[in-house]
Amino acid sequence: MRICSIITSFTSGGAEMLVCNLAEAFAGAGHATTVISLSDAAQVGNAPGIETAMMARMRQAGAAAVSLGLANRNNWLTGALALRRALRSIRPDVIHAHTARALFPLALAMPGVPVVLTHHNSRLSFPPAAFALFDRIVDSYVAISDQCEALLRGHARKPIRMILNAASARFQTQQPRSAAGHDPMILAVGTVSEQKDYPTLLRAARPLSDALTVQGRTARICIAGAGPQFDQLRAQAAGEPVELLGVRDDIDALMRQADLFVNCSLWEGFPIAMIEAAMSGLPIVATAVAGNREMVMPGVNGQLVPPSDPAALAEAILETLRKDAHYAALSQGALQAARRFSIENCVAAHLSLYQELIDARRAPLRASPLIRPISPCE
Image 1 (cartoon, rainbow, N blue to C red):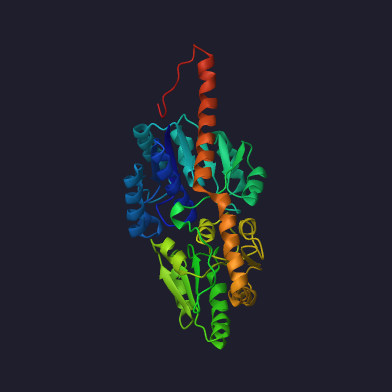
Image 2 (tube, one colour):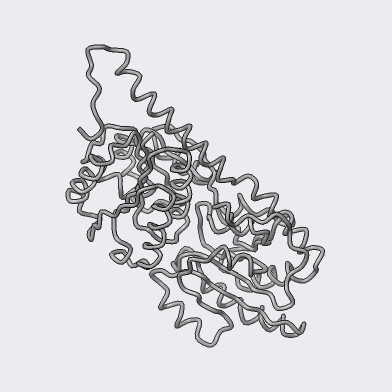
């Protein structure tokens, strides 16, 4: 089939990484696959280097990567015209929007094929009333977590399919870790934004570092990512024992170097980086918010702490690193938890949904010889 996925821009966010992982797998399975971004990375404040690398990686896998270059994503008419031109060239059998922003121009472009929307968060970034429009164009919604499904069920009037997130197989390790390093590396990964609440990690860093110093150990606390609040975070981090790594394209290597993964978000959908960490055998310390609670099982693969509580965050990290046997058990638990989130299962679930929607859309046309099938984007 011909599959078209739409994202905001090519960047290292969880949703975008999932889309690119899926596109590579779709193309590898013989499907004509295109990923369209609404804007260039630079137009929305993302790193052009990451965009170039992601597009090259997809093309190498046999998928197409296109940017509409929309400087103003709120100009629906311009977006609809650009999207319509792209869809006429692609002639997709199904369109999967991974950003709600794509639905407004899609409504005007009238693509004539099934449309899927995945909302990648447990909070809405648009007014709930927008679902009245979404339901007119969306054939099915995809939920990535229980909380996301509950959110959609409260507003959407079209079918909802639960498909768990997944990470690239390159993060997979076969053996659990036996102990944390003497001088542990503590890693956080994600966009520097209000949602991720990195200031809480900054406030936890000093007491955490001091406690390890008493044990004769040195902590390396790293944050990989950029975003709208990066400059503000850099100013706040001055003098603190925290390294801001900025945007990185070697997160898999960083995961292999790290001893523990930390997520201090105020809210989540279902973070891809947490799946990547579990696949890497990393114990996880995370805030007890939607999404995180579905991944982290306290005492099994990590610990959960209250949001915005640096003291609890520091103590949970120290507890995880304190005893080798406990750490090893959590690493084993991380690998076991990661098995639920295989890219193979995620790909199969998406392809099954797409085929069901395509067949359902075509069935009425086959039933009546008086109706001429309409070509996509005709």
